[in-house]
Structures are given as structure tokens and as C-alpha cells.
Amino acid sequence: MAGNDTLFGKIIRREIPASIVYEDDEVLGFLDTAPQAPVHVLFIPKHEAIPTLDDLQPEQAQLVGRLVLAAAAHARAQGLAEDGYRVVINCRADAGQTVFHLHLHLLAGAALGRFGTPE
Image 1 (cartoon, rainbow, N blue to C red):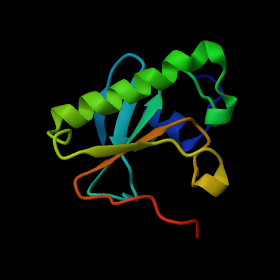
Image 2 (image 1 turned 90 degrees about the vertical axis):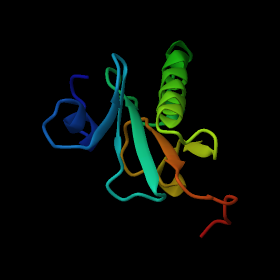
Image 3 (image 1 turned 45 degrees about the horizontal axis):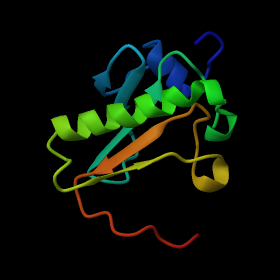
Image 4 (image 1 turned 180 degrees about the vertical axis):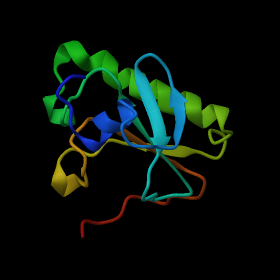
């Protein structure tokens, strides 16, 4: 993680506070400070600072699987799986990415509807 000076790198190093709701050896999950749903948790890799999904290399494919599995495990543990949840990875600014450290959004807790049209 050396050299990751993003907001998420600082959260991983506990330099700034976050409401951590999930952690294992590879993944950290914490509440989004600007939630887009009643439940909005961000899942990030703890040991690799990959800026965007586009920067992911084939040998790092397992990392995305770990993020997805962590989000699904958290959703089940919180009783969200039965009603449903959404997982999203934004790639670059036009898609809504604001922190350039690969992360997955878990959204749940209400009917989310279909994806809308571009702004």
C-alpha cells in the first residue's frame, strides 16, 4: 500500500476515521459518507492501490472477486440478500468515480429501481 495517498489509503492506515463494517485480510468495508441508498458500503482492497477498473491487470482478477464476495457476505450477514442489493464499480470521473482507488459500492435497504438515463 505504500504510496497510496488517496482518501481510501488514509482510511486503510487509520489516519482518518471511517465507520468500518467489514474487514478481512484483503478487504475493508466502510459506510459511504454521502450515501445513495439507506445502506451504502464501500469495499476496497487493502493491499493494492489500483486507480481504476481499467488499470486492473489479468493477474489481479482475483481481487475483484474478493470485493464481490465480501459485499455479498456482508449483505447476507445484514439480512439484505432476501430483498436484494446492488453492487457497482464506477470507472473514471464520467461514471461517477471520485476516489481513484478501486472500490465497489454495495447499495441496499430500499427498492433501487432501474438505472436511469445519463445526466
